Length: 426
Image (cartoon, rainbow, N blue to C red; front, side, top):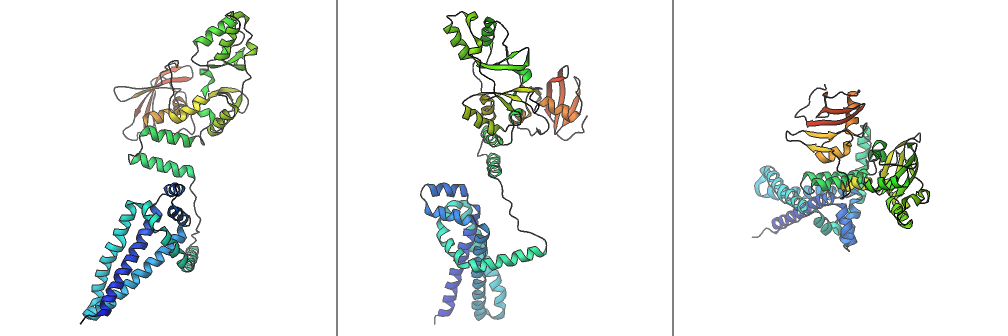
């Protein structure tokens, strides 16, 4: 004779295990899915993706409802299995039920659905989102009570539920670093994306051309000499000064100069420089690169002079300097090839003292700090607390610095070697 009660119990246990798998897989999918991808799918017309994204906005409520449902069905399935086995095997069935239900719940209600959800988190989350939304609504009163009890218990131990909100920049930067570590992004791609995020943190003085390296023209020189110097310059925009480089009186564009030469019929002495020289634009050295980029685009200009808090000239910055922070060095056939970073056969690197730490880190994939110094020479001077002599050796931040050349108080060239292990500073 068929024991219908037993088979109904077995069918109920199977249904409860399936429901448990649904809750487990939904929890994993809705916590592992990318909200950015779901929002993109929603823009492409997927209503289910929009529901999933809305559920993920309140993770505490979502996870609470799924855990309540999951525990209810698991406990009920275990109770039914124990009851059925007791009728067959007596009191010893408690042990049998424990092992059998543990194996069934572990395989079919935990590992299997969670593995499937991890393989395709966005697809799984999109599929189950409408049903999960109903579950969250049904269990919301129970979830609210559970959350209140949890907060009360944590409060007794002094734990406050303060939610730390990660900025969008930090989240994107973490995703970029993770993709690079897993091989999804090449180093150049990681550097470009990271540099774009750094525009909010970097200042103009981090990328400017120092006044000692500026290509400036003397406004008191004869027009013929100015035209000759402009032709020899690798730049199209050049500042003009009187008496000293500190006293800048304007900025001249090479195209304006050559148009003036053409208008004068080739007679360079007849050129009126005051008619083609534009007023200089001064910006503070603490201006953020993001703000300076927007200012360049708004003013439709590519050139600005940088001053410190006292109004003294520090250097100049161009739109190209900012773009190079994102895409790397931009060179054309008129750029002057200047020695900067030169790898050597013995594994060391010859570095000019004027090379910025940021460029050095980007080229060699190092992590030298740039908080207190901008250039490689500045880092050595800051760490050594002295102006080193030629031949002196220092080891800072896992890198050995050997001073190769020095001009007066300027360290002009160094030899850098990655230290195999931490060494005491010399």
